[in-house]
Image (cartoon, rainbow, N blue to C red; front, side, top):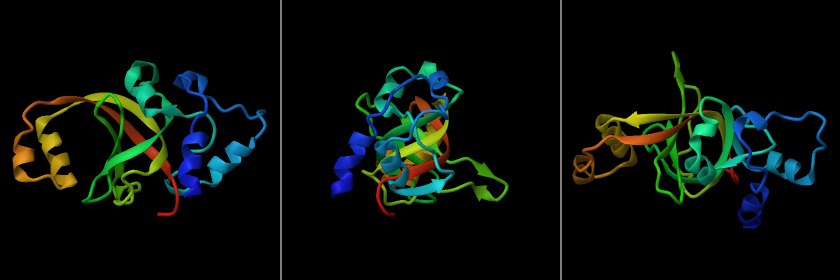
Length: 174
């Protein structure tokens, strides 16, 4: 329980554009940096420490972060229940913000645990914007476990922020 209250405080780090996020190797390591480094379970590559962006900040002004490496902190809304290959973030603007796990010849480079909805995460990756087709939206709805009526109601493509993830740190033990 103590960690649950600690995480939002730890994630209140600087929110800066991608070009200002370069690591300063001369900066001293603070107690909060150490606590963030020790927090949670890592999947894929460790996203590292330092400044993070918050989901609502990225949703509000995505253009400043497109195509550059970023670290985004937020709360997980949904996770793919088939393979753990994507998740979505909770955000106040109700803008579609999906995190995808890239794949290679051997499959996905890592997967998210399927039971982390509601967990706080820090995810590293590259941000893009795409128009998600009706077919893909319906596929994602199937992955979520939506019923046939809900899936059939998806008839329009939508603009989606996509974070192509290299790794994540998930709050707590998974």
